[in-house]
Structures are given as structure tokens and as C-alpha cells.
Length: 216
Image (cartoon, rainbow, N blue to C red; front, side):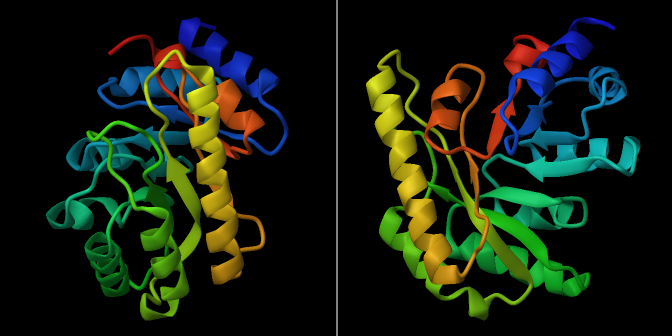
């Protein structure tokens, strides 16, 4: 087994039960994804719609594809047919576009609301109030199913700050789960540099790229 396979094995063996590994494969060639696949990995995350679509068409049908990047409404049609989960719903406008596209192909699309908890203006996401508002109106979007939240912490060495931000995301998730009646909500947070803190704060899904595939 190569380096990628070794890293897949490491995470599969070290992540707690109930925490799903999303292998973030953006910018990586199909061959690298296949190495991870052959090591047993079945969940992959991509953040560029056309690359996502292209890989989903080429790779084995039993892969669970997650779209994790900022999604423009004009690219929704490239993502919805292939996505098991769209993690990055960051506006009502996008939510409506995903709902409408899913309706066209008779699909109910699983989604996460991306919540903004970091102190970096470059990151996308909904405020707590916006997330709660959308969660209370999910009946208006019958072709999407709300599963929980996704969040990114500030890129900083201050672990206390990262912990506060992840705890805030977990709190928002609890609130929207209660409103929307989600029994086992998903909390997607934690990447290569901060996934251990994310798990401590309740993450059920970690998005690992660099530690598996190497630097971009």
C-alpha cells in the first residue's frame, strides 16, 4: 500500500466510532482517488463543480460524493445529480436553487447549512439567526433534507479560539436540529490541522485532504 493508502488506514483506525472520514480530493488526479478507494475509502469531498462532476462520472458508482465548496447557483445543475450531500448551503438563494434542481430530477437532496463561526471575513456561511430561520422553514423546500451543519474555524494557532468556534457551531447545530426535528444531526467540522479539536467539540464528519493526499 502506498502513502495515500497508509494514511487512509491511519484515519480509519484512529477516528472514533461515529466520526466519518471525508477524503478531500480537490485538485488531485483520479489516480490518487483510486489509491484511496482501493484502500477502502468511499467518501470523497470536492469543492469545484465541474471537477466534481467529472470525477463522479469517471469513478466507481459506490462512492459517496460530498460537495464542500462555495457553490454558485449557476453550477447547481453540475452538482445535484451526483451529490450524496451538499455541505455548503450558505444562503436561502442557494437553498432554493438546490431544491428546484433536485425537483427537476425527482431527488431529495441531503444538505448541511454552512454556518459562519470564524473571525475571517473570507469564509462563507450563515449567522446563527439565518440558520435558525431557514431550519424553521424547511417545509418550503420539499426536495431538500436538512441533516445538520458544516463549519470552518479560523486558521490560527490559538487552540482556545478554535475550540470556541467549533463549540459555537455545535450549539447552532443543536438548535436547528431541535427546530427541524433532526434526530441524529451531522456536524461537519475539522480539517487536517484542527480535526482533533473538532471531534472533542462534537464533530461527526471530518474533512481531511492534506494529511491524506499531500499538499496541493
